[in-house]
Image (cartoon, rainbow, N blue to C red; front, top):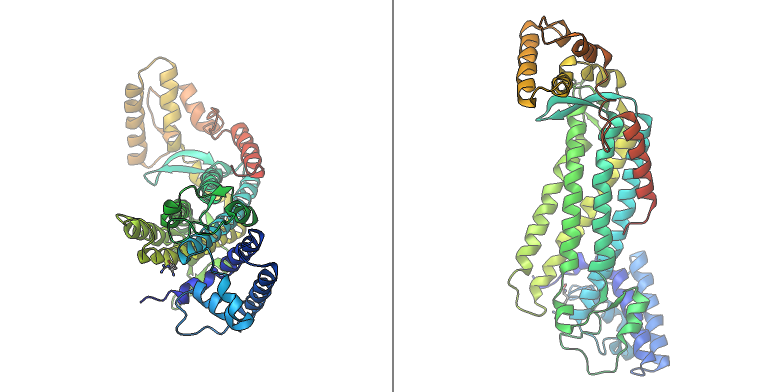
Length: 436
Ligand code: ARG
């Protein structure tokens, strides 16, 4: 129950980085000697080598990774190993390790998000002129270009990138180490020196807050939950689009699997999983809120429960972003199927209504008239342009023939080719600029 080693051993790189910085600072501040520092650093190198090649002798009574490292260090370099924990507590140590871990993972998430967004931009570029129906309520609504649709995901991902940048640079800004157990330490430590070595912008200004704070874990999981929610919508669309009913996309074999019994089937498994991943991370967020809520200051062992949700979030986000990129890069979009679905002239109903509006008719009335025309067409099973009606004059029929529906959506952010090209440039520029 008490032990966390089976999961927190994953923090060893951060634990070693923190310990090295701490040892250097202890010597610089005259709290230990230079020779002792060198022994500690040599020992930490030996410990690292063992952790790296898997020969580190973990013991059943190692409570967590922090205790295991210190225990092994002392075995390797003797009693001087016991000096490493001077002016430090596991409370500020674990907060520091988790902060370093979270920052590194937020930066990796940014790279993966950029890779996926880059893949979407490239596919958008290839499909600037392919119309497909845009949907509301999953009913054909108005045609859009495929590039426009794909770019919608790029903007979501760019916002996700901002959220992870916030986690990496702001939420993890201040060094917890040096807070000691909760009140500060009895030694003349130099926290700024440690902060600098570990890449923190500053030191946590309140030792109580420093050991109590897990906001950065919450922020990371929240950013991941939002990102995965975006990816779930992409996964969902790939599932729908790859059905025979839609036939808009063929998923790459590497991201699909055959049915064990029905030879004709190709299942979009990876897209389905992409669709399903978000809720577990949303659950982790709810779980961690539960752990932290109403906790009295300062450190409480409850907080050890921050790690498994964080680690699973990191792993889930990584596979989801990689899978999404693989699927987007390998998907084959069926231009003909999409264009055919978008050429159904019912889809131009709004444009006809807008034509009447431009002539001065109130929108509600125009909407009613066109609604009637559409009903007639659907009931007779004919295209809208073949409906006999005084309302479908020459200009209105021309709208139906010309397929001018996309190019007329020329407002900023609309689907007209010119606007989509503009958007492609903007997306490329935003991606090339560093996350803020
Ligand atoms: N394994 C603990 C955790 O993950 C480390 C900190 C323990 N500190 C303590 N005073 N028991 O939170």
